[in-house]
Length: 561
Image 1 (tube, rainbow, N blue to C red):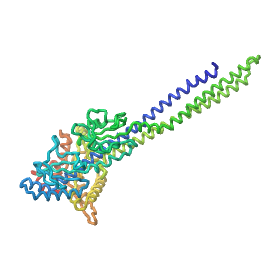
Image 2 (cartoon, rainbow, N blue to C red):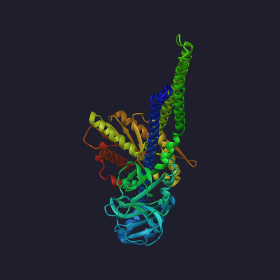
Image 3 (cartoon, rainbow, N blue to C red):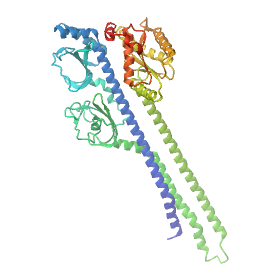
Image 4 (cartoon, rainbow, N blue to C red):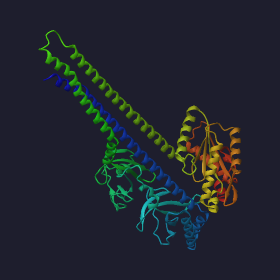
């Protein structure tokens, strides 16, 4: 074997192959990072979608609670129970028909008496006796088909003075409630949302048409025995990311499962693995071209190096028989100059590879930073009330539990203030829900400006708010709360040219290192709020004065909104 052949082989083995191995490792690392970004995105999308469904259901529960709390509806149903006067039925139907017009997206409202007997409904169809689902506590939710119309039923007990006088069932159009589940933004071309409920046999029953099976709603189900199915894992309560799992068509998919425990519903966001791999390959296409160019350049450089290194030796060999007096130094000097030139070219290639790698690492770091920022923004959105921008109930409970743990550990105090807007329902009934929303937004803006950065304010209900103050109750705090109540009463709102003021009632509870749980502290603040309502509203009541009121519920009934 000639020397130039040995040099060529050695250069490829010692230089080109390690370079190729490094590029393969770089491909793997970048591909894995891009796949991780796709997985984080599908996890974030499914979490946000779950939060939207939970918020939607909570809103429906509040709407039904508002209907069930109507004084005229409760008194009419009480008369029905006591006297059996069927003249109450038309009045009840009129009331629930008005609620349907006000709220919208309602298919039917049915009312039953305390024994479960049918009283009235919007459709005016004589219904059967109401049978409560075994093991279900009011309120609860039920997905069903009414006259081939998919509905989400919110079932709640109607109570008067703490005693159940009947049951109300509000059927919402399921299609309009989960319309945004059809939005596949972020899931690619093959992506899809799967939404299921518990079937009669314990399996998972689809309640929406599937992308590749338009007739799947309330017909197609997945058995509990198919544990490798993402929808089965979701109904089992497992919120996980499943790679290379099996879709309902038998294809391999990447899926994120979510379980809504209160409703016993399953939610799956999925995308085909073939599309994930295609996205990764498309992302790395330019990289493959550059790597091919680098490898080809390295091999070409190897041939050049072997040629220019062996050339002086070949020339020397051709002259050995003729050269008697010594070696022609000119031939050797020409050979080593070419070698130095090739060495410089190889150095340029090495610098090019290093700069390419640094550029790729920089781009990966930038994409990772952008993804972290997006995830942080999604987390912030999940903890905020969409109307007012204040923190929501879930986030407030998390911070309350944290503050309670901290107070127990360090023997410190905190103050919980519960308050709501007096006669807020009258604002909605008189001026419309747009006016009510404007009051909530303006009041929230005022509260944000009035509180300190260490205080936590959250919207925990329709017109209900809560403030967490990490300090001891003293005269300064009492003065602050009284000033806050007075300043709110001075706020002015313009409803169609009519100026209007609002007031708020406050209930204050204090944790002083005792053995109470956060739920018990919340209960105390609610009791103080109820007492403020009973004493005439627009006042601040502390838990220390709760013993001065004998029957709060009776006063609340007299002063009901």
